[in-house]
Length: 229
Picture (tube, helix red, strand yellow):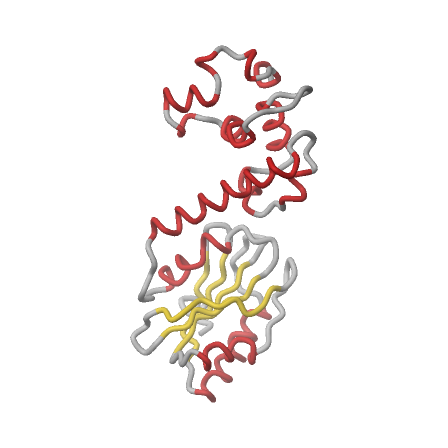
């Protein structure tokens, strides 16, 4: 670890995180340096860089920052509630910047469009979330609704929970979406049976299920493209 165990005031000025950011740009900073800047300062026993190293080491990867709770971050020695809140706020701000940069998609023309609508929000979720993308007759997006939150490997959802918002918002068709926290986007037998059940219920009410998208870690599967819909 070497220099990372030093307090910021013991590091040459030109090598301190803020000075490196100003001189070289934010892209050159390590995750520890970025977190150290967010923490701002350490305490009498440990410097900001050392605390940042402890926080990063408490996670399996930097991606875990998206899903880790404020409570868990607060338990890292020296970080505290305020520091944990600053880190979570920065992660959420980054997520919103990415979402804004993509722009609000108005029309879904392909499975990739549908997956792109929800990928940033769903790819790091630690439980299965079931959502529905509601569309009008021109495939314009009316809204994206979360209808169920399940467990690590199961999404407990009933047709009425899915069809209710579709009826309330006069959707003519919809795309089912749920995530697999394991990252494996292959449809399970339950996924296939559930999709066919929703298709039958939708037909009765005049609402077409045009696809079922399974979200993984930056990847997705379209059940329509796979021949299941």
